[in-house]
Image (tube, rainbow, N blue to C red; front, side, top):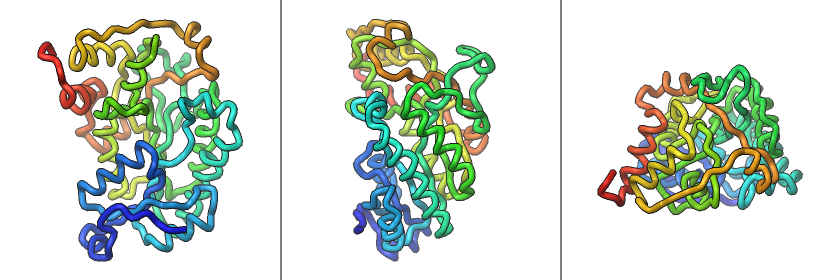
Length: 306
């Protein structure tokens, strides 16, 4: 199995930075953004072509690339959404469980750190972590949301990956970027919905956090990390910003969880993750609402009223 070379992956390039990344997820949103960041920063990298569940192909990729770090941004989230996973369970297991574990195991055999972009959609508000309480789930907390098959597989694999000391698990939630045309962007999604719920959630601003994931690799950090901006933001708060900065004529309608349940197959996760650990390592990390304005809405500003 060959490798897809995307930028300065020469021996000279590796010597200059001391780094070389092998990235899985070339056709995905996060994988594409990660490659772009590496190009901007002059970090040599290649995309792996092997299927995650095919051990021999992964071994060939690593042998050919000789990376210093491996990043996994591949996996199944479902198209157009996670409801797809409810009716494609074997395919979901193959990618999200078998594939991720195989990659982690191959990396461990070769002494390589694997930065794994996982999910924080494995929790839901409960009695110990009530809505609007400011009490978030910590890295060591046991997942309590099994409403969707997607989340169930992600919780399974996170528990198993705890045994791999070479894995850095990043719990991403409701990812947002400054590219407001990308259909995977949480903001893009909710601006196109006929109706939206209005629930505060922890979210991940990729423009701020993806560069931090590269720094985490450089530091050889491992273990589980809540990979979200501190605090929470609600659907309505985001849409109000969208109206104020982008489209003053934009309007939306809300509905409640009971009404939402009638138009989706699997329930959705709503939670707050405690970002204290990540903030401690990267003190410059902005609270979610500040990050939204700085990285998403200010660069896209189209109104004079904001």
